[in-house]
Length: 205
Length: 95
Image (cartoon, rainbow over all chains, first blue to last red; front, side, top):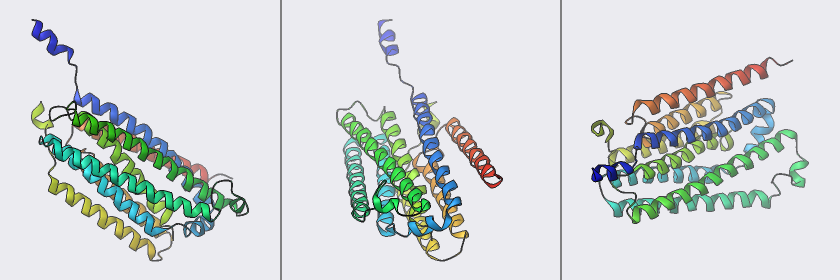
């Protein structure tokens, strides 16, 4: 009787847990989705300016960051496999690799933004204010959307770091992978958003 | 119950998914560097959608998880598409 009681206090439902994560992801999809609509409408109104402004962006650095994010998505997916197979050490290594890749992404972003700011292109700069409305809108959206995405990268890194610690101390383990799975879902969302950001901002020709 | 839940993706399948995503990314860059007019954006968006579907199905495990997740994602994306269509009708027919 007593044993039964103890077993029942341990509430745990992986299906509902993942359902909750998906609900949260939907709010994120609609947040960025709204921004993509704003982008589309303004691009529709200022096609030439958007086209010319996009040529200012560095395709190479964008491509490198895309590939970094794709690889980091794979390492997270692999870390789930590793934990499900009971390989704790490999899980931790793969999570650490993901965090390093995320950091590399942010460093690239820093240099990319740094070059723009160095050329006097940032929201509210005198140079940008002297350009046409379409240019202002393009760079405003560029900084806002890639900035919001970078914030998501940082949040994802914090989340994955928490998961890393919990895998190490054993509270996330082979029998309980939910937190790692949900952290992974968040990380894939960040990748998913970038899949659309990259062609829309860097590849308009 | 735990019988069908326990699908574990193999490392090999994940490498294949990554490689296909990278190939599609390079393809997007190549296609958009050629001048095709408005088709550039259409092609880029089409490829991005294929990539997003691959990420959703394999990395985000929708293909192997309970059907309820797939259903919910499809519903949310359908709502989003409706919002896009309404926004563009508004824009196109505004005096």
